Length: 547
Image: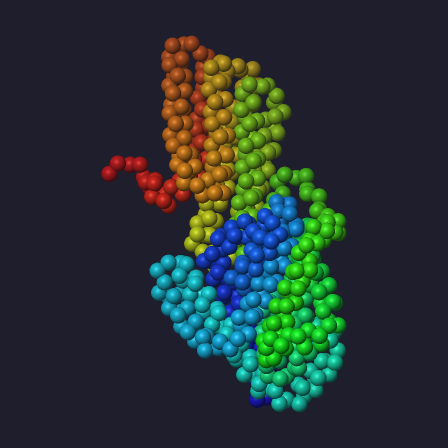
């Protein structure tokens, strides 16, 4: 086999390996993305739980980078302490080692079955989850197939004098070996891929055991550099967890490199085959780093906080705080970020509602202008959220995540409409009242205040429905809309009776009717949050028209 042919085969086989890893990752994200994120969220409560969560989630996702992005969604803005976040990364490193352990065994006879049954599940599955699990099986099969092909190709070049002389010269310098394997792991965005390649070289006899163990250390360093690069150009605080993870691995490599021969003699006792030797050393290294660093994590966290202080947030409230572009390829994380930003938007709308409530009692015209400026904030947040949601990798969305995206966008749209109603309608009415020195009757003011109070209560309920998908809250929200409609009818009827009896001034009567009408429109937008969930559960008919 010519050198050109060997190079072409190696490039294709490594690409097949990376594509298999990508298929497993995306398939698991689609099938269990929200569940994994919930498990990770629960795990971030203590160091031990966080470590175990990192092991479990990374073993399933087959990517410590994906786990790191999930951790970032919790730690952004200080929602979760840096200590459990670092513990998750220690667990994620052990998780990748477990993946390598499984793949180091001779299980190449399984890949045809994985690809076949994965294809059947993907094409014939009755549910989206079965299709996604079929995708996972195909990905695993492709990973094993690529490992088999890599071993065969490397075996072909085992007798190459030039290659052996090249690697023989490099093997005498451990730093160059570290650099080579580190660069490969960084380019591949996967320590698993780098480890499989190192194991193939060792199995074929292209590199000796000592060189393989040194390259294992380099693969660990290279893969930990990827999360660092993901945070370039953002808040320095985003570097805390990835830099801490990289620093712990660097310290581990510096300590382990002089002891390679000692490790080699002890690890050989378990299994002397080159592939298993590399896999066992990889596992031992990551477990040792986790054991050494998990206790002093609080002190490490303090150092990282000082080294990477949080950037002062812009005073502009219209600037989004949670829309992290690095998470766009991980839908469950990106959707969580968007939901958090929508809650900020809801808080801004709440401020506008409270101001409009006050302006029908007070005569401060400057507050009308202030509310209008606040609506500009709502509009800018809405535009940022809409762009962010459209930039999410829609091909990686499961049916549940696609539904979640639709609900988040619908809530943002309704909030934007509410802001417009307050700004364009209620504030116009408030300004008219103040300029014309109109005074609303006390009973009418009390009714309007009561309606505002209900709107604020329902806005909180709508936010709860969006975040927790609670059927009971959605049912209450829609039923409250009916009560609100009854209240609006009663107030309208009351105003009409007063007009007929001549007991009220025309200008104030028209003003009151307009206010009530606009408040009812706001209620309709708030209540719409519960419609989607109730329709999905079959508790809301698409139409109230009688057949």
